[in-house]
Length: 143
Image (cartoon, rainbow, N blue to C red; front, side, top):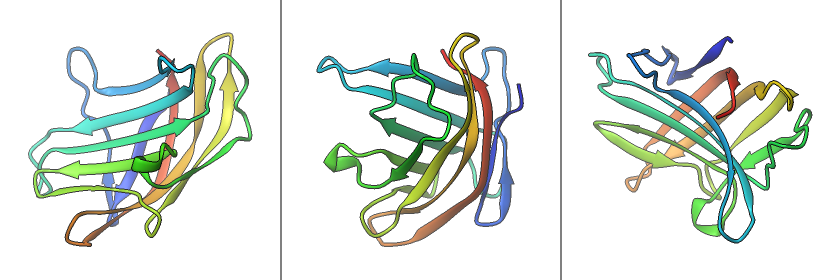
């Protein structure tokens, strides 16, 4: 598996793997039956940006069905839409109606539970500061 990576304001961000790992793709459903795909990772190495966390949540994504070719627009969390978030010690932001992004599924093997694709998004915090997440790629097992 290729794992996951992206750039945050032009600086490469990869997970730093510890004993139990910290990159995860998970397919599940809420009690109301809405299926979702959650992809996340963090890096807690000592960098200028401190601890960093990325999460993508794709709604209406049943991982038991081939998702190859699906594109999810990452928008407002509050409206039950697919969204993305970026957090660090100094920044806590997410996509919104004004600052959004895209997650594209390029490969999905439902039998082997492997999913791959690319993503990008802009995260804004409450002060309207922006972090540009670009060149995101992932190739992971789905838990």
